[in-house]
Length: 136
Image 1 (cartoon, rainbow, N blue to C red):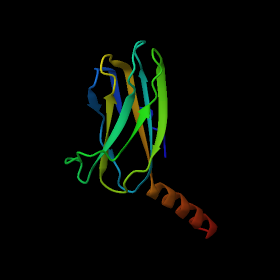
Image 2: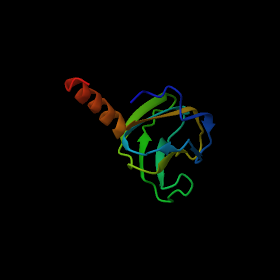
Image 3: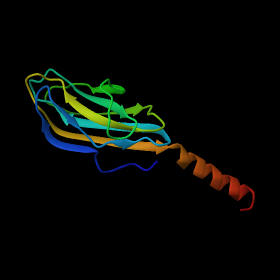
């Protein structure tokens, strides 16, 4: 897996109790999805941000029940970054949604990165090792 330096989602802010969707992630032959969220909380904030994932078999019709989620722990007035390892489906798509759980204050400087590792990358590497050993 090569790290994706470009964020999946970049926003200056998310309003109180609002959500914003990132770009869909293709999970064909997915092995691992690494997700990093970074945002800044208001100095008087009390609600954390939450990253929620929804599944779609075709990239268009998404579930209404979350596939999985994780929270970015709140530290009032601070920029907080958290990474989670997600066990993705091996086919279909998942879309990340960032939810500002604070009912009064916006979260700011929001960035979300998604990096996916696929089975074929491991298989391809194993095939190269095998071919080298066989003189190929």
